[in-house]
Amino acid sequence: MDFELDETQRLIRDTARKFARERVAPGARARDRDEKFPADLYREMAALGLLGVTVPVELGGSGAGTVSYSLAMMEVAKVCASTSVGMAVTNMCGELIYRFGTDAQRQTFVPRLTSGQAVAGAFALSEPHCGSDAAALRTTAVERGDRWVLNGTKQWITSGAYAGVIVVWARTAPAANKGISCFIVEGGSKGLHVGRHEDKMGLRASNTVALTFEDCEVPVDNLLGKEGDGFKLAMIALDGGRIGIGSQACGVARAALEAAIAYAKERTAFGHPIGDFQALRFFLANMATEISAAELMTWRAAAKKEAGVPFSREASMAKVFCSEMSNRVCDKAVQIHGGYGYIDEFPVERYLRDARVQTIYEGTSEVQRVVIARELFKGARP
Ligand SMILES: Cc1cc2nc3c(=O)[nH]c(=O)nc-3n(C[C@H](O)[C@H](O)[C@H](O)COP(=O)(O)OP(=O)(O)OC[C@H]3O[C@@H](n4cnc5c(N)ncnc54)[C@H](O)[C@@H]3O)c2cc1C
Image 1 (tube, rainbow, N blue to C red):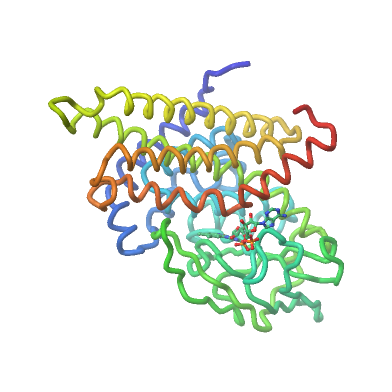
Image 2: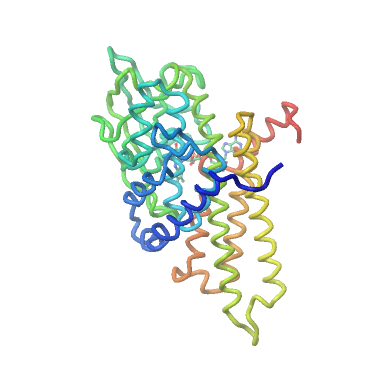
């Protein structure tokens, strides 16, 4: 077991850290307040290889593996969770097309994602009536000549109004899981309508919209994977995506911890810095310990994925632990700030709002527990 980062991992982490500090952090508060989507930052991020950390260099990525990806996500999330979620989804779409696409699909769509030409990628699985129960989706795709014709509505699509490349799941046959297929749809396609931007509690600079497909035609060649394999592809992508959200949660929690330590050193009460009070010192000690455990769980899942061995259970464990940890840590950071934690002058209120969705998207905490328990009942090592 080696706890040291290799040269590539260190390079990616340092690149992401510098970019996050210098370019992402300065506008984070204003973007959150104004709900401003960070399109320019994605273009800059692309130039650094951060929109395709795990895809090969020939396709415009960094070819650096999942641990590097996790490190990069943590750095960006630490300064702006909104920016990190779009980064996560773009990486996820690029990797999915790289892994399951035809040569033509890889050459056409992956470089658009990694170069920032597409601005961002979007992952369109959830629908208004179903999120956890993705196999109940109702969007249809019917083959007509050399086209697939899509009809239906997707809900909660991150970066949906801006994404140049959208991976869409649709029903091609009645069977629940096996009737679902996956398609690559270009942003701006005829028949693709972008719904209103959701007014969210957190991640306010991230764009979240419904996408409606009305006789939206895509070339037959844009079927990703085999017909009927869509559900399997979604589950594979989400396993990896959970490492991304676990990393995001760790980044946000670390930001909250650092803010809380700084505040505890400065604020005085009863003639002492509040950081002298044992109650708060214990809060901080617990926060730091939980973050450290969460990071290790995330990197373990990432290392397994990178090694090509099964990692679903580890990814779900990391996701559920990191996201719940992040909510606890951000809540405590607000508590340590007292009344100042509740106003937007200090960043911890944003961290808490941003953390909240982490137990919901990319599979709720309950769904992660379903996955973990299923593995246990299959006889996996507890
Ligand atoms: C900001 C944001 C961004 C998002 N981005 C995307 C995106 O880019 N692409 C995309 O496809 N989706 C996206 N989503 C959707 C997200 O993945 C879903 O909201 C999530 O999967 C939960 O689905 P749901 O909202 O339909 O809740 P439901 O599935 O209706 O769940 C409601 C409650 O029931 C519980 N529940 C459901 N099934 C079970 C079960 N079997 N056992 C125990 N409890 C259960 C859930 O845990 C939850 O507490 C996003 C959501 C948000 C809020």
